[in-house]
Length: 292
Figure 1 (cartoon, rainbow, N blue to C red):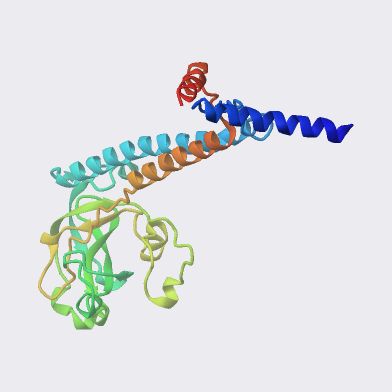
Figure 2: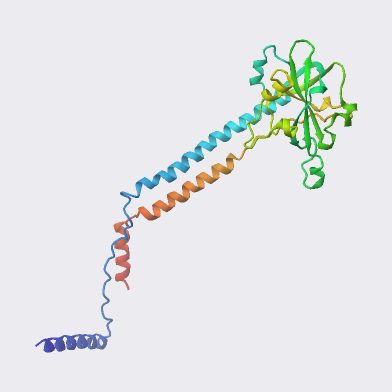
């Protein structure tokens, strides 16, 4: 029985194809079934919480914009202080905490017997070059107590740079200024403590500018100024060693954080968000297929 039904179905199909070819007509093409839109993983559960990543990177990028604005304003402020005319040392030395990089004018005498050193340091007045010529100028900054003439305080003055070979006083006697002098210096505050640190009494120099420690040893007030280049005398340290250098890499950080925002958001959309084709698009495809 089943064999008979199968034979009848095959005969009908063959006859239908034969008649269609004889009539010169093309056999009807089967309409493809509409495929459902491919659905990606639902953002529920593990999807939406992952948006914290692009939101965080976007927030960090915006924060870096604010930091860059602050840094540019700070650099401009420091440059203006360096260009301003020198002022007398304030009567209240605590006011110097808000006067870093401000020029002050002082008069007094040096006490060369209590010299201190900060190093290793390169000469800020030489060009930034690489190689042995630059390495040969590595030395120390000479810090000398300075007794003020118009008041009882003694302060610390960074007279400038000397090579390591010229650190002993007997090798630079011509540069040991005697008598009362007037000079202009830039107010400086203590550096951040070095992570490794050192023993200045053992090494003979400080790695960083620790004003309070140096003042205790030299028995001076905790006031520190960098003498300007005009204070340089023949055979002595070369003044003008103030470096106004602030790292300003915030633009790099801004680009990095915003790029990560775009990348992580694109990955999230690709994995957790799918757009179903509009019905008009589906109808258009069907009409075009019927014309074939």
